[in-house]
Structure formats: structure tokens, C-alpha cells
Image 1 (tube, one colour):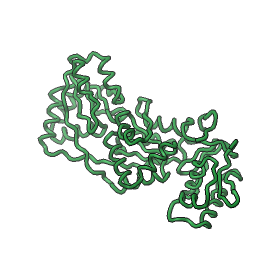
Image 2: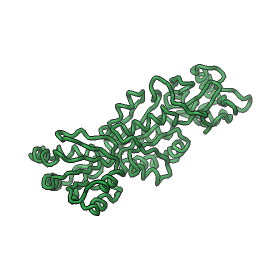
Image 3: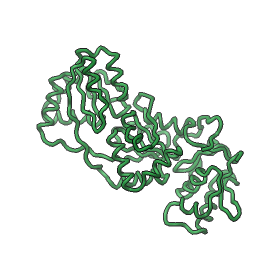
Length: 375
């Protein structure tokens, strides 16, 4: 993809104007969704997995009893939601106050998220990305420390073994299993939207979630298009840790791992991509251009576009100045196959919507192209 030479930060009023972002997790697992919305994005929650109920009350009582008995100084859980499940279970079983006392001073780490935990009464809750947990264990005086570690599924990073080798007293805590998604149709729709360019980014909170979302994309015949759009930079896939990104790497799909290390880590990665020159751009006769699912940023100004116009501009943008025939353009437009007349009408509407004339050029008897500078 041809890019502007300097790639300066965009100066549009909202960094994510025109972006639609899929949160492939329970929205509570990615509390940066609100940050993205404040930056102009439309956020679509589409959890690919649900939390399966516990098999029986015995497992619940065993888990709570183990935590209370251990009174851990350091707690590692798989997700934010799973942490809160402990409290729901404890209070439902009449042991909420005991759990509160047992975990009052514990440091809490969320494996599958890069956001902190607002715990009920704890004096401090420390958040670290999962790959930093082991490093923290090695540089801290872990010998003799009581650590409760919830099992990591389906991917193990070997954290329990590292902690034991460092001398910690590890208490193994079972995790709830995964169940079917709350809304399977919404998950299927999100994969098709990602493949068709109707969303600009997909965010994941767990390795199980990213693997499940990819499985749905494959079953819907959308995986190749997702891979292609991620490879050309028009679809951002973001995760909080390398473990969560593992299924994406295995599928040959590029992704970004958040590095901010705070409660808005995923939002930080997305805003940096779209607002600080990370997204693909072209130098056109109208100025620097970026294409988004809801329009385009042209010379630091966001231009909203309807779905058909955005799809047409996206196809021309990805061609990088190459001429597209009417047949190629027809295949890129949403909906049923379009006639030559429909393509001409779509081109006319796009030209009317753009702030500068001549950006979409007609090449006689061949088709249309984007007026890319210095082509």
C-alpha cells in the first residue's frame, strides 16, 4: 500500500470518526469500549462465547473454600467477569464476607485483559498483561508467597510451573467452562461484516474467544477475506496479550498486541492505529486519504459516506490507482450483483459526496481509478 511519506497524526475532531469496532467479548471484559465511543467509534458487542454454568454446587463451594483457606497475597484470574463470578458465588452461598476478608489485601492480575479491576473492598488491585505476570513473579520475592491461580484454558502459558519454581505456594482454582455465545447470529454477522469491510477493527479479550470467533468466520466462508483485509491493513485485529493473539497467529492473520499497560490498553492501540498514522493511506489529488467503514479522512477532514459509496471508495483505495473495470466494481458493492448502470450511479454519488472533484477518474472504455498522486 502506498503511504504518505511522514504519516503525521490525523487532526480530525474525533480520532475514530467513521470507525465501526467489534468487541468480540462480553462488553464488561473490555471496559475501553466507552473510550472508543468517546473518540467517535461505533462499538458493536459480539461475544463469541458464553460462560457455561458450573456443573454443580459442590464445585462452587470447593472453589470458594479454597480461596478463603489460602488467603492469597497474589491472585491470577482469567477474565474480569470470572473474578466477579467468585463474589456472586460466595455471597449466594453465605460466605461473601469471608471471601472479602481473605482477598482484602491481595494483588489481582487479569490474564486475558489489559484493564484493571475495581474490586469491592480491596486496598489495591494491580493489573499486568499475562506475559508480564511471570516476569513479575521472578523479580519479586515469591518464595513462600501464597498465590491463587485460576486455570488458563484453552491455552496454558506455564505460569503455575514458573511460580512454583520461584518458591510460591500455589493454590489451583478451577475456571468456569465456556458455553455457546449469547447471540450466535450476531457473531456470524460480525465475521461477515469484518470480511466485507463494514467494520474497521475487532478486539479480543481471551484466547478462547479469538479462537471461537475465527472458527465462526471459517464456517461462514469469511476467514480468507478477514485474513486478506488484515494483511492489507484495512482491518485491525487487536488483543491485550500474545496469548490472546495465539489463535490469530496460528491462522496466519496479523494482529496488534496492546502495549499501553493501563485500563485503556486496547483503546490505546486502536486510537494509535487510526489516529497516529498507523492505518494505510494514499496521497491523492485531494490530499492524504484514509478509508473507513463509515467514510474517509481526506486531508485531515472526515467525510461521512453511505455504505455503497464507502465500499466503492474502499475498492478504489485498495487498487492504489489501478483501473477497476465496471465488473470489478460491481462485485465490490454490497447487495445483489449490480448492473453497469448501477455502477455508474454509484460512482456519480461518490463523486458528489467527496469534497474535491476529480478524485475518482474515468478511464474511457476501461473503468475507474482513484487519482493517486505521483502514480
